[in-house]
Length: 195
Image (spheres, rainbow, N blue to C red):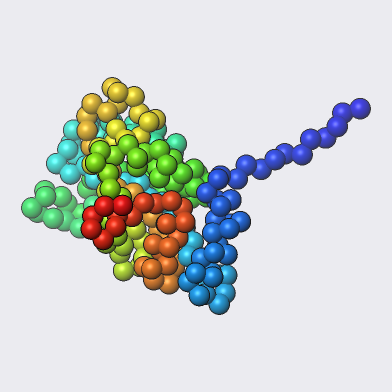
């Protein structure tokens, strides 16, 4: 007689942390009346602008490979929305940038690897800046060198390029966004420039 085994759903560590403890702590710390007012990470967008290298196929392939390996998803090409003569860009021009949007479990896995493995590998790292919040409370981190990600081999980091990580957060203001990111372990630099 065969016994039925129940499938165990895997929950990423930071997602479990948010649901089990951080949500309640944030509600108390921020003085929120309703649990639905607690800030929540909606998605993470990892993007690279190709800039002056938009016509260089080797550079494009290196960037595409980096985003695929780092995020585990296939990136998509971004088109220009406006014409900018100074940058030789016309509206509708394809491949001016590449990005990946992460949601759900994949988003929490990337966040865990980014904060706990990649960020500590940044040279002379003293924390991320506290002024990189936009008006909506979303947070942007710019990385100058993709070699901080251990998923990439030495050969894949020979053509150096940067990337931008955007945390899109459902919140009421920037203070709430920062409190959420601190719960996830994002290290903000102190007032004097050091953590």
